[in-house]
Image (cartoon, rainbow, N blue to C red):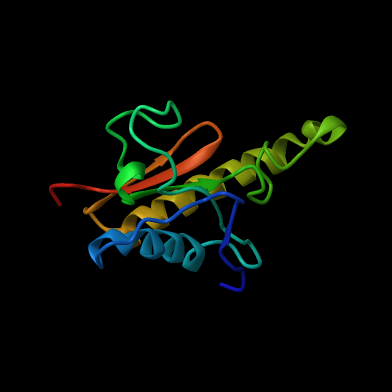
Length: 131
């Protein structure tokens, strides 16, 4: 697609080996199947440390095997509308359907070695340990 991958300020990637560098694959696949002109923003990757309260202690983020992607600016979703625009119910429903379709496309492209979870305010993607 025509968008680009951005990172929120402070996002850190951990890449000691090729396997650790899978964060780039996750972000690239998310962007590749995104709607036209939508830019993926990675909001979290390998920053922090186990026990810091940012992620669960056993999180894949701490070893560089997970990313979080912003969804609040995904076109047409409830997150992208504000104030009186929230009354645009049909557009919001259509946007939510497209968001879920995007998540399914990411999961299909990445395959079974990855888990893709649509959370309330973000999309979480991580590589499986036992894939």
